[in-house]
Image 1 (cartoon, rainbow, N blue to C red):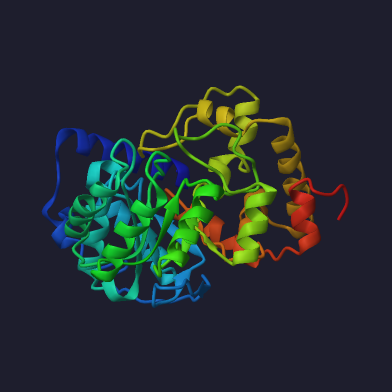
Image 2 (spheres, rainbow, N blue to C red):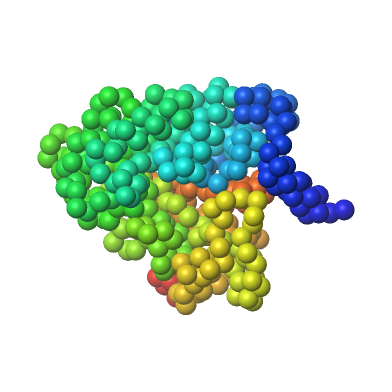
Length: 368
C-alpha cells in the first residue's frame, strides 16, 4: 500500500467519523496538549527567518501561517506545531474566518501549548458589510475573547470603506492602540491612495500611522479579485512606494493559490478535478482560471519553470522566493493544508534572487 493510499483511507475515515459525530475523549480540544510526537513543543530547526515590524515589539516570521482552513484542533495542532518547530512564530486570522471558528482554534492551541508570549497574532476585523469604525471595538471584543488574549500584535482593517473619511479609521485604531488592545496596525485591501491619505492624516495629527499593509502580492498578477473588494499591491507604483517607505507588506495568496504547481497543468488539460473535500476554503479550478489565467501570467509561469529547472527546485519555490526577495519588508502569508506544503514553502527560503532575476520573472526585462 502506498503512502497516498494510506492517507486517502485515513481522510475518508476522518470524514466518516465527523459525519457520524464520533469524537474520542483523547481528541477533545482540552486533551490536545502535546504534539503528536510526545515531546514538548520547542523550536528544533531554525529555518524561518524573522525580522522587526514597527510597534510589534517582537520578531515577526517572514513566512506567516494562515489560520483559515483548519477543519479541527487535531489538524490545526499538527500543522502549527510543525511550523513553530521550524522557527515560525506568526499566525494570521480574522474575525470572520470560519464564523469565528479559526480564532477559537488558534486560541485553544496557544493555551494548550502555553505559547502566547512567544507568538505574533495577526487579526483582522471590520469586513464588509460591517466595515465602519464603530464596529472595530465590538468585533475586537469578540476576537480577543475567542483567542483568549488581551491584545493583538498586528491588527488589519479587513476591508476599506471609501465612504468613511480616513481620519475616522485612524482615530479608532489609535484609540485601540492606546488602550493596549492592539500594537501595530494597518489596512488589508486598501488602495495606495487611501493608505497614503491615512498616514498623512496621522502625521498631521500626531497619531501613529499604518505600520503594514496586507494586500495581494505574488509573481502572478491577480487578473480578477479572488473575493469581492480585494486589492493587489503588485503594480509598479505600489512596489516603488513600498520600497521608498520601507512599509511592511503581508501579502495573501502569495503563491497565487496553486498557479505555480502541477495543478495548473491538470486544469489546462481539462482534467475536471474538483476541490479537496477534506478541507474547506480550497480554491476551485474555476477560481484558479478566473483569477490567474492570462497570457502574461502564462509567461511568468514559464519563466519560473525555466529558472526552477536551473536551480533544481520547484516552480512554486521560485514564485515564493520572488515575494520574499523584494526590496521592502515582505512577510508572505502561506496556507498549507498538509505538512508537505509547509516543507514546499520552506524550500523557497533557499532561493536567492537578484534584482535582474526579479525583474525578468515579472516580465520587466527580456533577458537576465
